[in-house]
Amino acid sequence: MNGTASTINRNILRLAIPNMISNIVIPLLGMVDVAIAGYIGEDVNIAALSIGTTIFNFIYWNCAFLRMGTSGITAQAYGAGDFRECANMLVRSLWFAFLMALLLVVFRKPAGDFSLYVMQGSDTVQRVAGEYFFVRIWAAPASISLFAVQGWFIGMQDAKTPMIVAILSVIMNAAFSLLFVFRFDMGIAGIALGTVVAQYIGLITSCILWFVKYREYMKYFDIRESLRFEPVVRFLHVNKDIFLRTACVVAVYTFFTAASARFGDTILTTNALLMQLFTLFSYMSDGFAYAGEALSGRFVGERNPGLLTRYIRRLIFWSLVIAVLYVGVYALAWREILTIFSPSEEALNMAGQYIVWIIAVPLAGCIPFIIDGIMIGATKTKLLRNTVFVSTLLFFGIFYALSPALGNTALWLSFLVFLFSRGLLLYLYSGKLNANKIIGEGT
Image 1 (cartoon, rainbow, N blue to C red):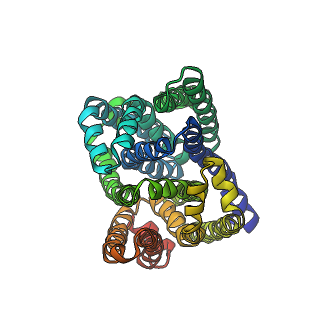
Image 2: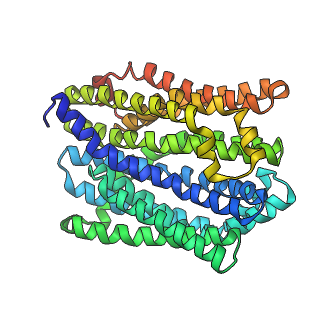
């Protein structure tokens, strides 16, 4: 692969732009749901939707190791020219997706009851959130399988196919949610059902596009090979560390909403609105992180530290560009953006008291996001696990030390420290992103 600056930028953007589009439309799915909930008529619907989506974020983000582990190992196999392993990696990943989805569906009642209990909203909010949860849980088989398929596409250096699936899923989610809520008067359960239908449409579309573009890989499929002990152990080893890393991230995000609920429904609604802005930034920034997964995994497979170094530098540059753009947009137009999600003047006025934290988030979050992607592609998963452990301890320590005096401000401060410390620790403990060290150590 050519290592000139123009070629590097072109290859990064070829992967990053479709991933950015995919990741922008993913939060749009949630934002459409929030907007519909806001216009049903009561703020309690936004609060209940926030709790319901937080529970599913906790569930699915803890399953997201499947996407990350699949993309890294597939990208390395692709870089090494091992197309048989690429094909078997998809089968292996789908096996695990099926097992996880089966467990979720079978144990939906205790999982739902416990999750709602932990969130500790008001009785009305809990009741409405329960309606949402027990409908949306039926999307689990499709949602988790999409993690596996998306990770495989990314590892194969294909960002366009996940983009097409993501766009279609959002359109279908909006269409069916509007239909079920306003035509059939199903309330928040209609929003959940719209998501269920959209996820299955997305999975079916992924299968069709896979067959169109990759059907020649069918000759490499081998069920016995996909379940062979050595590659399965490696897959489990990589995913174990990613799971623990992701569990910490999800614990912080979930605790953020749970702590918001303890400050009252008004703060819960306000923080839910502000987190829409964080979500918009994080998913767009992750577009470059996903490009980092594909490219770093490929160069690790090729054993090419020179190109890996050049690509790391350009990935960080582009990540900083995105962060600065978001800071400007949020500083100038935060109120106009939040108005899209809720017409409530009380919530908007309250959001103004905390908007400075959201404006600072892109600068604190851009580096850990991009280094995460690089390390996932290289399957340096122990580093990801250990650094996030430390950052999580900092988050909870700062919150519990300062929340009696600062309240919701302590929550936002803790969150900012969590993001910034992850980036700093990843940079330092990767040898300042030394490519030879990254390739040499693997997991």
